[in-house]
Amino acid sequence: MSRSPSLPERPRLELDPDMTPDERLEALREHFKEIVQVNEQLTEQLDAARDRQHGLTDEVDQLERENETLKTSSLYIATAEELTDDGVVVKQHGNNQEVLTEVSPSIRDGLEAGDRVAINDSFGVKQILDPETDARAQAMQVDGSPDVSYEDIGGLEEQIREVREAVEEPLINADQFREVGIEPPSGVLLHGPPGTGKTMLAKAVANETDATFIKMAGSELVRKFIGEGARLVRDLFELAAEREPAIIFIDEIDAIAAKRTESKTSGDAEVQRTMMQLLSEMDGFDERGEIRIIAATNRFDMLDRAILRPGRFDRLIEVPNPDVEGRERILEIHTQEMNLDDDVDLGAFAAETDGLSGAELASLATEAGMFAIRDGRTTVQQSDLHDALAKIEADDDASSVPVAFA
Ligand SMILES: Nc1ncnc2c1ncn2[C@@H]1O[C@H](COP(=O)(O)OP(=O)(O)OP(=O)(O)O)[C@@H](O)[C@H]1O
Image 1 (cartoon, rainbow, N blue to C red):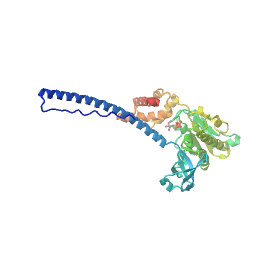
Image 2 (tube, rainbow, N blue to C red; image 1 turned 120 degrees about the vertical axis):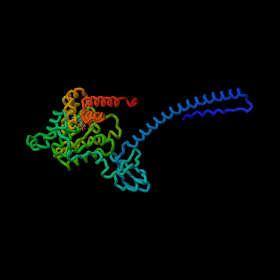
Image 3 (cartoon, protein in one colour; image 1 turned 90 degrees about the vertical axis):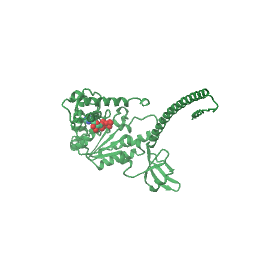
Image 4 (cartoon, rainbow, N blue to C red; image 1 turned 60 degrees about the horizontal axis):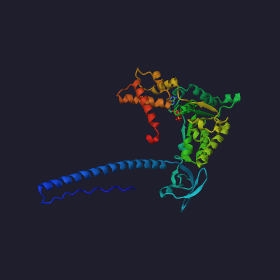
């Protein structure tokens, strides 16, 4: 680290009592010049110090961010096998590696052999998992009666028809399928850009069939609780069997069913195990009764084709961004509770929102309401919609700026 230059000496004024008034004046002038010079030097040093301070603040910010990332990085699941005087023997799930590790006294106090624990990269025990906080509870979201209906979904008439045929009919008219002697599609895969209503479709069909909606995010399965993926998939199907009729919804399926890469890291092996478990659950699906499975992805191109074989996700439904009529309908849905001025023409406005997803249109409606409130009004005008659109587009532009320049 470079050392800061030392501060300049404070100038001294030396006046001799024998000096003539002219000499005294000259000495004072000299002294004044020296003070001005020192002042300039100090100002320069202060500026340099400020620059340095800014640089260091940036560095501190970055380190804090890194620290946060490290703190929130993935934990692995293990079982505390044995408590000994030297530490705790933990067995990591997934690869069954056993390690003797140290544990802080506060965690040790509450730990018993057989407990499931979360460990970090260096096998340090970070927390004890109780049944409520364990991976199963965190990775699955169970909703006995989701409150989305088909009328809440705009612009996806064809997709709704297909989902009803592939998921709803087999649940409601199982006998008819049996009598005709055909197998209903095993799994339905919804694919398309983010925020287009894929989750809504799955919830609506669960609502319509009075089925329990069980959602699991593929990314949670493999990123957050490494070593648990395969077991969670097993749990997922077990839970669905307990709660049938049930709709299993696996969001971001690409996280567990991506094409195999060349690299053979342990992460890949974990993803692979999770996917194999999913495929084997689906292959043994016939005996499962009233359970339908829907998956969704924004990255269809990345999927391993093995999951699309007959008997697996054999019904593909594309859910694209809405066209102009779809956008108008979505705007109608999301403004139906709002107090709209007579000048509002949603049809004309929809034509200006090309490329926006359903989720973006939903937040646009709320944003327009915010503009009206800011302006002290209780009705939303066409101009609020335009302001909201400009804001959303500006936010979009800002978020697409490369990180280094953001
Ligand atoms: N077609 C639509 N009709 C009405 N609202 C929609 C539609 N699409 C999206 N939305 C709104 O956007 C929100 C998010 O939609 P949803 O979660 O269904 O999208 P998704 O396709 O599953 O997104 P992701 O791929 O990011 O998970 C919904 O709660 C709803 O408010």
